[in-house]
Image (cartoon, rainbow, N blue to C red):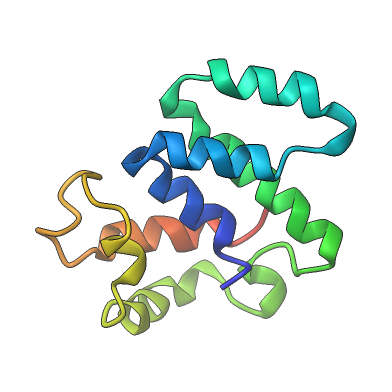
Length: 121
């Protein structure tokens, strides 16, 4: 779950930009707190996901979490199987209402994109 975290938050950001802006504040770096927090408040909603992706990826790297699914032995060839195994859970898709046609689709394309973005960071 942690390894895909940056991509999941990047995916869910458009569903609730203000809540994700709060997450970006939480992962703000202490040495740049004022300048980073100030810029986050002015950042367009469409860019919040990318900021969260970068900040969570950095945080996980500092904890020693493997930097992507490739570090766990997965490759892009595994994406269809990962999607198939994830589809019955749908949780990440259901947590992000209003993003395209998530509820109307089976979600495969969204999950595949999340796994692709999680291969390495």
